[in-house]
Length: 323
Image (cartoon, rainbow, N blue to C red; front, side):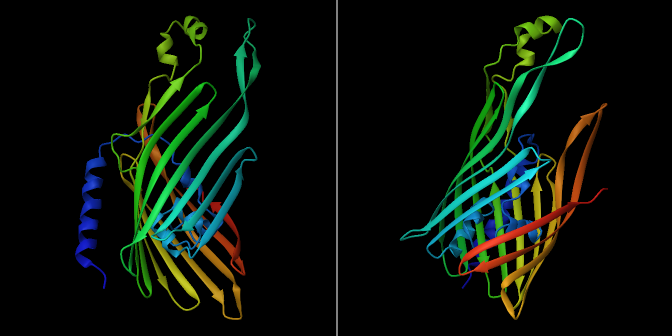
């Protein structure tokens, strides 16, 4: 039977963590917002219900669905230049499941400009940007119904002469019912763990030109906080269909965003899955002309999945709505 007392304690702990983080400044960009897989994106980007290795990017507890070995890879591009990639591997052990994963978002050949005596801007070379997250995951099941997972995250950002690194942890829980599944994820639970930056650039000449202190222009020694991200999702399963719903909070304002998805199979073509979904992103508040602004970006998703003898191929299309 499900341990109801344990689950009530868990919900209370989530509430207390939310209060603890309510005043934290959150700046570092979480690249999982791009999406973890075409499978998840096509059903509204609802976390925690994957049956494959890429589930470790969403909820480490979801790896209980791995029977022996699972390998996942995903790649997409934005605006023709930004490349997003991830790779995940999960292996069932004598006790539990062990997983490793890497996700990165990057672009190369960003042009650096310089101003010559005539005031004209000319190219002064190029540099690149890469944001990466490395994950080490362990999952264990308490019972047939309750599954737990833990992830150690290594964050790394490189841009020109600036490099940032940080570590943090996340915890996941999955309640597997007969028709209803619940997924809970708490990411970046270590409040004191930040991204720390090192800057090897020489800003002396630029500082002299603008009559400012060189330290003002350098990122050396600066930090950014890793925002607490909490995600609670549910899935209701029927024979040939499933309904998905999710609420996610992130950032210092603890803004809520919602995701919904619907997935179905045709009874006579069981190897195909069709999905559609609704997805929200939260854009952090920024200061513009002494005013702060925040925005929820909405999008719709559709997609299809093909399962051929345990090998899955998925395609997803996403369209952002103007608002």
